[in-house]
Amino acid sequence: MQPDTIECKTSRFGLFSIRADRVITFEKGLIGFPEAKKFCILEPKEDCAFFWMQSMEDPELAFVVTDPAIFLPHYQVKIESDDLKDIGVKDLSDTQTFVVVNKVEKKMTGNCASPLIINTLNAQGIQILLSTKEWGVRETLLDLGRVKTRV
Image 1 (cartoon, rainbow, N blue to C red):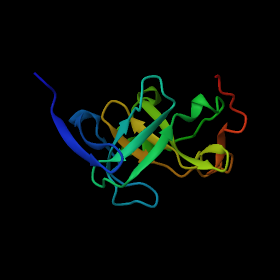
Image 2 (cartoon, rainbow, N blue to C red):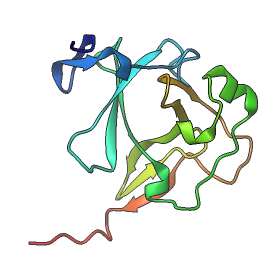
Image 3 (cartoon, helix red, strand yellow):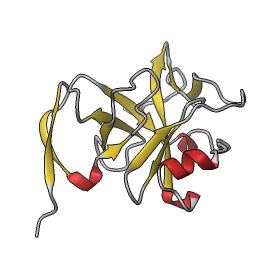
Image 4 (cartoon, one colour):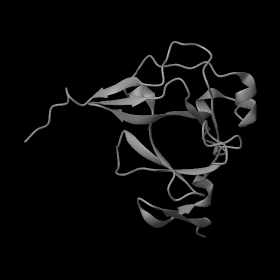
């Protein structure tokens, strides 16, 4: 039996189907987008470090996201127990952390001050605003000026 699928209309990728259990729900919305509640994560190709987090409700709304640990091995966030409870987390190993990525001049930066925490067991997510100033909204993930390409 095929799992249930739903269609997602996007401005970048056209219309596609996704398994219903892959839709991530952010009950509280996202910072700056409180009405945006349902998203899916699209992997452009296998073994890619950057993904699209596409709104299931607004074809125009999508963010590039990444796992910050790929670029910042010491990146850790303290998540309040209430936030974990809100998304049904019992064990931190059942979570995946993403940050929203931007290109600023010749750098790829991540908003490490407001990570997205996703419960991988129930597809519930929350965006938290860290109370510490240890991580910024434009942490350098990748310096494109230093990336060497092979010919």
